[in-house]
Image (cartoon, rainbow, N blue to C red; front, side, top):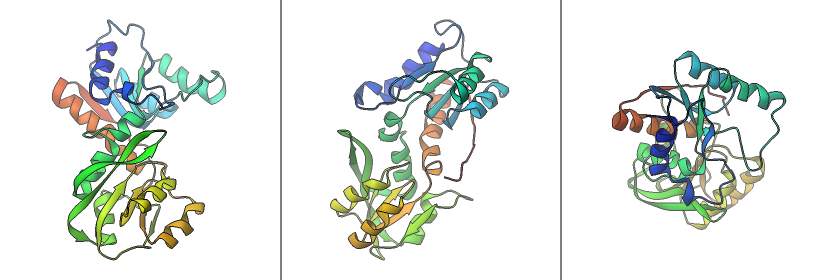
Length: 255
């Protein structure tokens, strides 16, 4: 596949056109020297586009880096300082960059939230969590009630630790809402929906008292840790369907 064909494949199921309110520059953010001709034989995947992931992708022989958090958001930034260092790392190796933000959060099959819902065994899953007119999260029910500790063991894989857990709600959890990453403020929507637990990446100080007073459990699994899910689902899909070699670049931030 060429870069143009590869991005067309990604967009065939991530569908950036369905998320017009997303300020992210979804799709190809940095092309290679011949986007319609150069053959792609290996694709690297990471949560974040940065100098380190660009260098590691090139060192592993990948011609493309696919990420959740790209380099461009909203208006274009000037290419100076850190932004210059990041972009130069891609250009000097002729490595292309593809980024999908909200489309990867919201995707019903390979999204961050869909992957987490599958991981914890959530059933009767439906869209939840509005942001800029877009539903980006999921909510559902458990076949059998679970405890907060049991649920936490399902959310995070071996070796991962949550940023915080707030046992403010029911001991027996029957319903859950999930919005990965930096969605702590959406605990308000989770409470309004009558959910027993809200699972997200980070939870801020100003949201603590609301959760306690509303009587809702919260798991803050980490911005990074809750968003390795989608890129790895896309990675597995690409390998299976297109037989292109892939690699995952793991640079946890602890945040």
